[in-house]
Amino acid sequence: VVRSLRRTLKGVRVTAVRCFFPPVVAGDLRELRGALEGRRLQGFRRYGKYIFLLPEEGTPVAIHLRMTGQLLMAERDRSPDKHTHLEADLDLPGQKLVYRDVRKFGRFALAAGGVEWFVAEKRLGPDALTVTPAGLREALARTARCLKASLLDQSVVAGLGNIYTDEILHRVGISPRRPAREVREEEIGLLCESMREILYAAIADSGTTISDFVGLEGRRGGFQFALRVYGRKGEPCSRCGEPIQRSVVAGRGTWYCAVCQR
DNA sequence: ACTATCCCCTGACGGC
DNA sequence: TGCCGTCAGGGGATAG
Image (cartoon, rainbow, N blue to C red; front, side):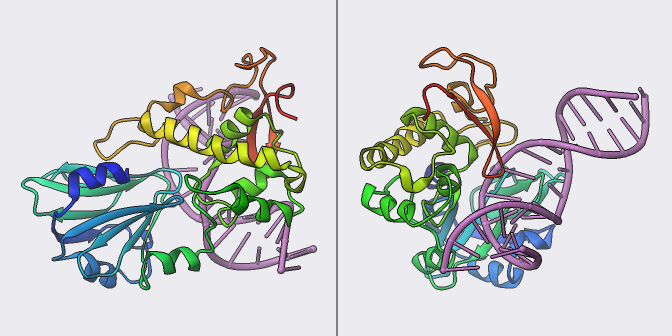
């Protein structure tokens, strides 16, 4: 999404912001409008699951899509549907930026002290694309939780959700139930590599669409067809052929191979 | 201090 | 056909 925002909206000015569902803005809507209206969007960043819009000389805007949030380019004269909660008019002829969210979990917030401040405030750990074994080792060593619960904890590593965590654990051959502190040194290195491999492959495929995710142009991702375990209960493991299992780990549906993952 | 659980919210789906 | 219960999951709040 951030890559698309850069291609489409770099240097574009926001001319007006309309909100149709106030809770989508965490904080004051007037302040959000103040941060965006009349300003050019000069940059876009991502940290973990957060997207940051960086207006010229202004306060960054943090966006979390949660489960079903969508940022979309739309025609200016198109009227908002029941799931559209926020719109930004742009100085692009005939276009606007739309935020839709069926389940209303997603949020816009002001990062008043800047991106780094926001990341610290939210207690986010190292980003999953740049985390080093040293950075992961410490967090895993001092917890009593299982590995899957730790990887889903955004203060341990920022950016992994349920789907990618299952895929990463299958790729490195570790059980989601393994106590985090019992993950060996060389396995921590493999975990870090695997995060990058899975996430970059998913990005190259424009994301994973189980139900709602679409990119800025409204197109579904393609990585759901490359998933090895998530949602594939009973299908043969891509590595050993044994049926994929499903159970609940860390309160989440969890798919894994009981033979390959120990 | 750390961990587990509940809750938000809507649509899809299964059972009757 | 329609009604009801359950499930999906990110993260904040709350309980233990």
